Image 1 (tube, rainbow, N blue to C red):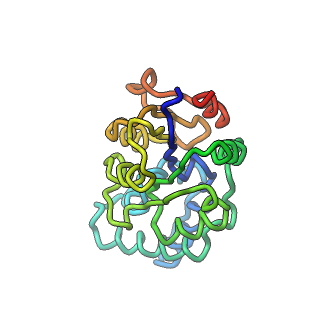
Image 2 (cartoon, rainbow, N blue to C red):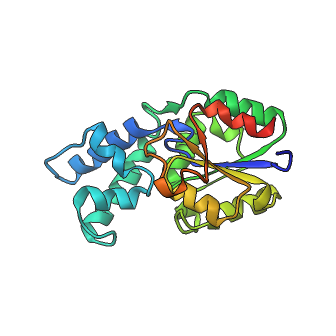
Image 3 (cartoon, rainbow, N blue to C red):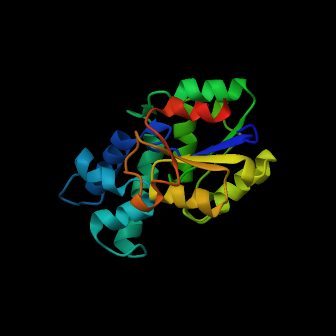
Length: 218
């Protein structure tokens, strides 16, 4: 597969274990706004991957554009900027994989649903900026995954065709975005927060171990 020239990664659940920070900041936001409940890690996990506004909508059981949803979303985003990576860390095999790809000259980007101001703090705190050409969130002016727009922009900035790029994620949103963008290969990180969607199981390259990604370039 020598025609692979670049990789695009999701962030939460793909490169980093952000679940503890997502839970902590969601609970801080709920408390700040006067709600009388808090979420466990297990209760938080199903809401990861669709973005902070969707998380707020799901947690409250209210529409995406409801004033209560928007208030929780903004409180969550502001608190995440203050507490970007208190507990977060790179997932097993990620640093080794990124080091190898960087050493071999592959270009890399991140596309995430994480609020932009939180993403900036997280990628800096965890050392991911050292590997990436570009990191994008919807707040940078793009529709959320599964729309292909952020992937297209990454490829444009990297100067690499979509057909020479691999998309790596851990949710349905990532998989659908990768196929929508006509990427060379779509990979599914099994250490993430969701199971591979059944209808894509035979279409993606599953990664039981993140370092399995390196098999694509051998």
